[in-house]
Image 1 (cartoon, rainbow, N blue to C red):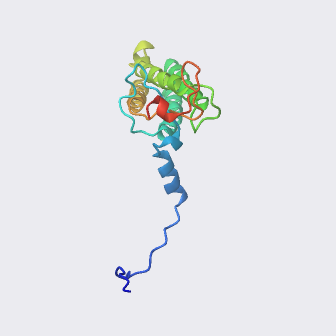
Image 2 (image 1 turned 120 degrees about the horizontal axis):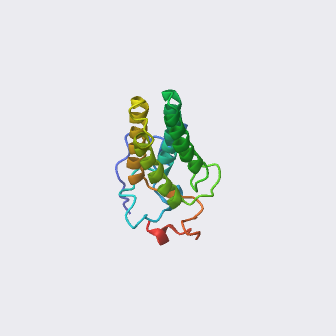
Image 3 (image 1 turned 120 degrees about the vertical axis):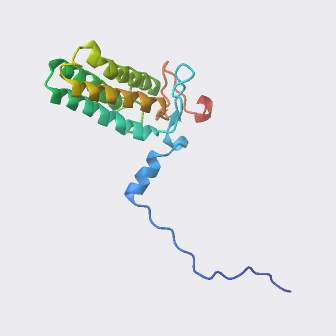
Length: 182
């Protein structure tokens, strides 16, 4: 007999705005869902300490950091700083190009091996000026190599490492995110 209706809306509904390319890429880079990839197993049962830097952001930092290590070594004029920059930067970019994640050329290196390489070349960048002896001859290059190494180590400790194909250290393929601890 009687119909109960809610109050009539005062304004018509607003259609959703179309998402711009920059916003879409930012949202994709912050993606922590299963669409972002398959969660890596913790190294030594503990690393990374936290997972709040997305894999895509970490990938971009890998490429930029590797190029920066090479550039700093070349700009220093010291032959040992140049060699260290090329070795460390080349390792960073080379490993990144072949790692099993979204922003790589091909997927040959498991994500856990990439994480180990991050810790290795980050520590190498911190120690290189002192081990190779260019800390006193080229202090600016030494300081920048140490700074870049600390950045790599810090970023690695808080990266949400994820692979794309399910390739893990040991050669097994794991495609179920729940099976790894997502």
